[in-house]
Length: 195
Image (cartoon, rainbow, N blue to C red):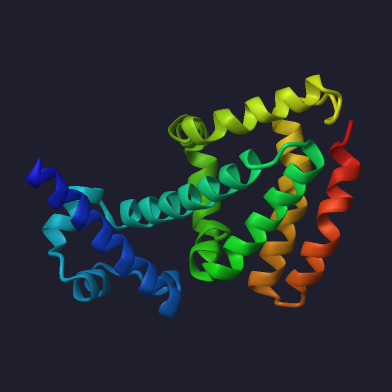
């Protein structure tokens, strides 16, 4: 057990260092030398745990995505009706982005997109525990007539698509007011998915 705990601590140490580097220098700054220097973890240990520098970036993106999904699921599952659930998910996403802009920037990066496209099925499978309650929530509110009778992936896309677009624009161009998005998006999204 202690060896496993040390390994997990090393992984977290490397990922924390990589996120700090990413925040300061962007993806170009994520070099093996920068990560070993910032994390105080040897390159051999990094290769042992992640396989490659790309493995570090992928693991960091996956950890950030998992944190986001955890917050979205928690917000959604605390609601009793579909409309408040949609509002809660939108607000939780926007809150996550404001609280963790570096992790959000990574999640919405070209690298994360590439990883997502290359490993979509694997990502979906590893996040199954987080996604199943969301899917069940969608089905329950469709059965009650609160949500439109669309596939769960389509409901997810109609709900999250506008939020992701606003977040990407905020992260890149910076001309979107997230407070306005928080006020306006939930009702506009609700009109597209309400039953």
